[in-house]
Image (cartoon, rainbow, N blue to C red; front, side):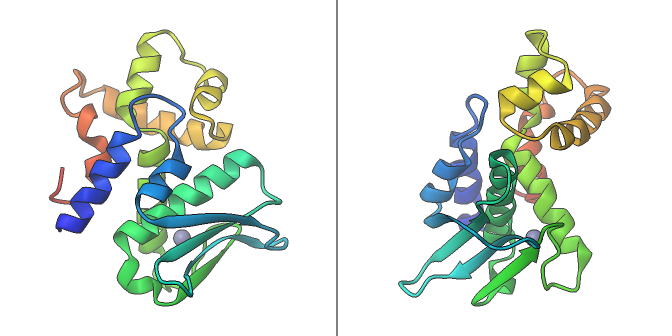
Length: 178
Ligand SMILES: [Zn+2]
């Protein structure tokens, strides 16, 4: 529990403004990031390093924004699923790891979105009239597709404004910790 909470604190400490620095989050969590040619069908990988700790490999063939999402996704596995990672896992371009349980990927994608596009930050830029998918995707340095999906969730939660609930959205991926 304490470990998860400190991961959450690390993530939050890098969410003061957009774009969120996923490299710094990874570094602060002790993860080394390497950009490598992983071939055509590999999205990313997290593996135990020979020196101890874990490494995240992102595919240098992917667009930098895609690489940022991959890093956030692997951070999510590191934070939530370390007991399942073992010596390492490799994911295809659609983030289908070897888990045999799609719920694991759903959780990782959800936390990845919480890391890169926290609702409370979207809210800040939204109130500054940055409201188009294009503007927000640029501001958060994410793909338009990722921002589009996120904005659907944002509009749904906007029903429950004002902001009290929004500020704790990252915690939503850590049941009981928010
Ligand atoms: Zn995954």
